[in-house]
Length: 303
Image (tube, rainbow, N blue to C red; front, side, top):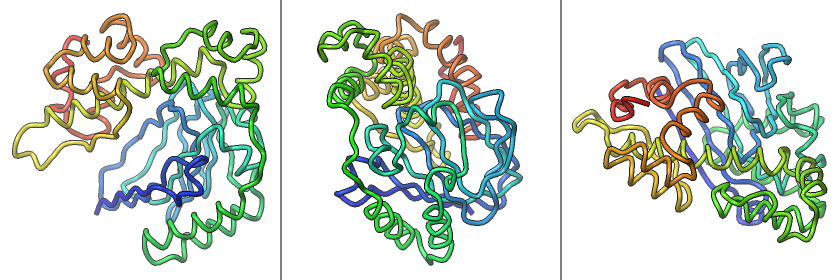
């Protein structure tokens, strides 16, 4: 059994949350999943078995199991293991909305994973219990809409940080830090300090993660397009902005080099180096691990 359902949050929550995803797997081979860097923070409520973290982005944080997990932005992979079953609800948190929903700046969560109640207190326990008792994914997502709406406060990061973050996302991570600072009217040093506090990474590190996330999604789109006919379908594309679309189109024509350039890298070798650094493995290995089909990454030969 393999269930995977994604839904947008209620309209009032979309400035703060990107999506809800419900998942339940049973009877699959034991595996290790890589939690890759992305421009979103992660909040997970398990439903049945706990979430087993074999390794955190911060290598100094010991492995452990979690009923709920809140993870900040990171620039290294996390490793999640399961023994053939896993289930839960995952929420993508936008950095600019973290203060308003959680009451803390994202910088306090950078590179770490904590139980959700360490930040939300009894609210996290109540949410976990309500999600476990809900009979369907639609009911669980309705619980999240209700609970998160009640959490909203007026807390917001400085407008200069919000402006810089939106510029960085819109450029696919390609704007130089000096240009970001110039557009805000701040010095690069002051921008780096406030950005780190309110987003969770410095502008330079955040640009690297944004660019990597676009490339990762483009790879998924390309793998889906190249999936062998009659195989029952490949991995679902994750969507993305113009850079991801251009990258996916390029790779579907068989050129990883074109995908690399479309996503803001100097060349194919640059993309491969960044993938190894941020994912801990080359692109073809990641695709094979995630989608259990080596053929999906066959067009990446020579990476």
